[in-house]
Length: 212
Length: 235
Image (tube, rainbow over all chains, first blue to last red; front, side, top):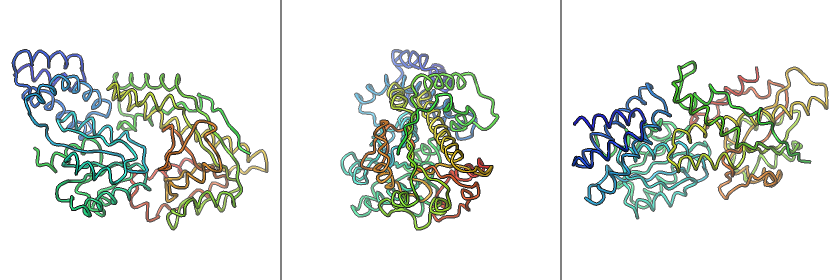
């Protein structure tokens, strides 16, 4: 549909006011909200994510597109909820205990929401027990942990160990990232996945949940 | 005795290249108009909101050893552990770019001005690094005024939480320095508020004492290797 193509392209250019207007127009034109979401908004964000991974665009471009995404999503979400249409999955994210640096974690949250996930943001300086609690209480499918300090990286292992201890490690995937974190470290502590940056985090979470 | 130093706002103006690199742009990459405009807007916010201030206190090696030991959680071998025993002068320091900048970053994210918020975060981080540079220069001048200076004298700042110095070292550092006097507080996890604050020790000595082989066990997990840039900056 032409309007959804237009919506996707406007989103890619970060034109939040146009995205707002086009989403409204699409809803009023009777296009099913799930289709507006998938073929307009998420389609646009997917292009942005791909271009970011290829270094064709940069973080500010992604974030301007994310703002535009929210302009559309705010109108679609209440309708989806009313109609009981589920999101792509439920993810808890947080900066681990001992670390206050949350810019990376925030970016991942923005992009996950923009891609259609339900995100439970646990904030920063999050103790291991709170991550585990999110699995028990909020039934999250993925836990995303971030650290900027080398000295707080061991907390990520504490979370994974605690999940094992509580026999929850089969029901949740873990993904870690942050400036000092590496793939080797992720393997060493038994995390399910590692993400180099926000864009790759989205791709990894999708792949962990078998979403194409 | 500690000294409170108001840092001139001109001294913390970030290097635009460094900010843009933090946003993923490569050196020399053409910057499109929208990104340039975001950068200009955040520079203006920084100029308006930043209130850079530091507190510095010169300490003996013996006093610093207690601070550095902290709660005994440092790595067995640390970069700073090799450096400070060979220093000519040591000073504890803490500085902040100010509460207002950190608050504004949070507000921008709340307002969904993500790009502006992320750019301001990068600008403020770079400004905090520049403020450390201002403190380093201040201490270098202090040391130079006291004894015959060598052209090879350098001062570098080292912070808890990095290169094997455990973050718990902040507690002892705060007890000794009391940066609450300039509005910096520590939470139970040893993290500072406002967020755009830096603390640590200024180490003065010959250039060569700061040049070490970054091959510690914890280096295996480090992706930034910023120590190499710091050593390079001494040349």
